[in-house]
Image (tube, rainbow, N blue to C red; front, side, top):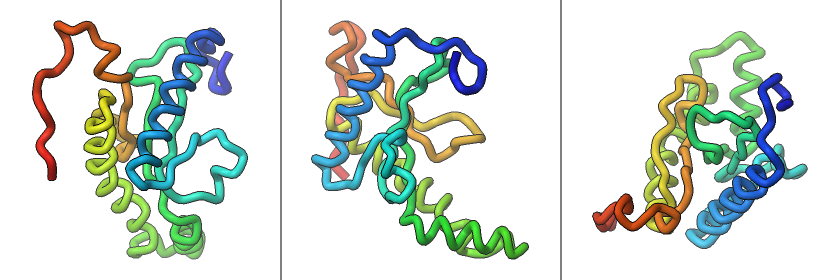
Length: 151
């Protein structure tokens, strides 16, 4: 069982997901971005692209996702503002705004690196990017034939 009471994926499935997550981290680092797996011990004190692996057996969406985390000092400023009872400040909105702006960049970088990536369609994690695999994993008949425009 996962931490939320859902059936946990098999070790074989988790190994495939972990490999995909590692490839995503590698691609983002090659693009020059700080990137790391969300379950790393040092991850709480890092800013950059956070790559998560869903350990649930059943996923309603992608088993790997990416989000952007601002520098911990910016996150702490948001927490301080909220705990002080001042919720409508730039400090509170900033991490979410940056996450939303970075979402498009993360998708474009991942698409350029050959991953199947798209927006998260979930109100609880609106800034997440879903990663479904590599385009090369698709059967030839299902592979996109477009060439992404350079921006």
